[in-house]
Amino acid sequence: MFAFSRFLLYFTEVARQGSFRKASETLHVAASSIDRQILRVEKELAMPLFERHPSGLRLTAAGELLLHAANNWKKDFSRVCEQLDDLRGLRRGHVRIATIDAINRQFFSSMLRQVHLDYPNISFTLTTMNNVDIQQALISGDADFGVMLNPHTSRELQVRAFAEINLGIVVPGGHPLASKSGVRFNQCMDYPFILPSAPLMLAEPVQALINIHGGSIREVAVSNNIHMIRSLIKEKIGIGILCWLDIMDEVKSDELRFIPLTDPQLKTFTLSLCVAPARQLSLAASMMLKQLEMLFSQIQTPGHHRS
Image (cartoon, rainbow, N blue to C red; front, side, top):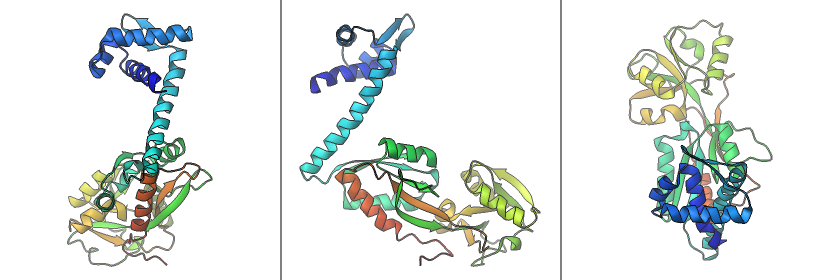
């Protein structure tokens, strides 16, 4: 396997670059050496891995199959290295975390800072995805665990920790609603609104509230981007409806105010820390997951208290 790994390194880089010369520049290996390695394996397989054109190289069907196998081999070998570290009792490793965009706020980076202080030799990769892609990444092993919003639980997905996240009215400081501790939607309908639209998950519950109250609302702007909605509220163009995750940093810095909506028809969002139960985590991933489970249990949002 290790003797074959040099070929895999050459092969995957040539496949990525589509050129022996470019692969040579990246790997700092003579293009002729790379070509000889690939020609040798093509001879052993009795079939070409690349179609050679004046404009560059293109994978054959056999090359596509081998590239898929090579990528799986690298992934499996990485897991083996993590398991060998576990056997040596080393408190180090690398963890892959998939998150929704809404989690990319100070409170989550603060969580990761705490984990880093406890396990300074564990590094991690953070990748932002949508819910569907996070679930697939967990199942395929491209991520060790993920942070999702309102996940659909199944045999392939297990929720290890969760926090309920309220929706609320967001206003700039000095607004007539700013001093309230809670508010019903119909108490806000006289103010101009900046509304969320699909694919934001907020769009559906907000539209449901509007429909319940007869669809009469002063709509001043619509956006499918949370950052833009926050900016428009700061500019006092209108008020908005966001979840606590979207606005907590601005509330902490006193830029905006968050007033929880108390309408009984309105359901909270559930922020969930998820894994694929069929996969065995490395020691490093297990340690980080356990720490995050504890930190998730401490999340509190205005207007909501865990029972």
